[in-house]
Length: 196
Ligand code: SF4
Ligand code: SF4
Image 1 (cartoon, protein in one colour):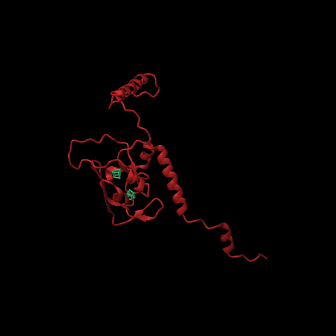
Image 2 (image 1 turned 45 degrees about the vertical axis):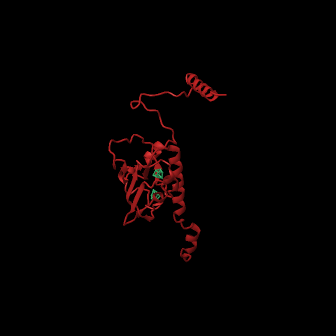
Image 3 (image 1 turned 135 degrees about the horizontal axis):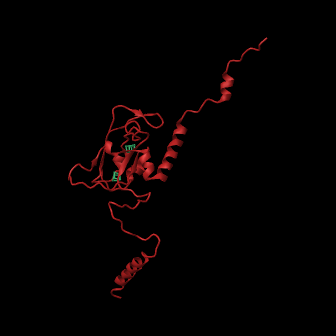
């Protein structure tokens, strides 16, 4: 019958409108920007680069493998490799990005860069207030703006960051050389002659 869809739609709207006065988790508006509603853990917008410890250069997890650059659908990541290497989280010498840019105005928040990174080096941020009156380059973020600490990662995605830390700690433990067994040390020790 003509108009059934409209009536059904109005019924859904009326149900939600009236229900919003009685349901516990009713949707409300807030006086933004003075008030803000907390964002859920899995909220995401643009990527950032994670560094461990306090030093954004020494602790940067990215090893400039360029996988994310190749996989990014709109090609908004640009990376160049360093000439020298620095130790990664297990002490293995690795390249690092001399340049790591993301054009946030092109990024479509797909998270593919995060999924393909083998080093847990790039994660999704929650910062959304990035508008600018500039038409060019103002949203081209460099390594310095993209690098954020692991402590920050824990603040915005606590459960996910804890899982990543555990996985990295496990990987680091596996790569450490095993301590020599006490038995073999005893076997190889020179035998002292019996004292008179
Ligand atoms: S989130 Fe998607 S579009 Fe944005 S930089 Fe990563 S891969 Fe590219
Ligand atoms: S963020 Fe990850 S995938 Fe991208 S270059 Fe760095 S280590 Fe490679």
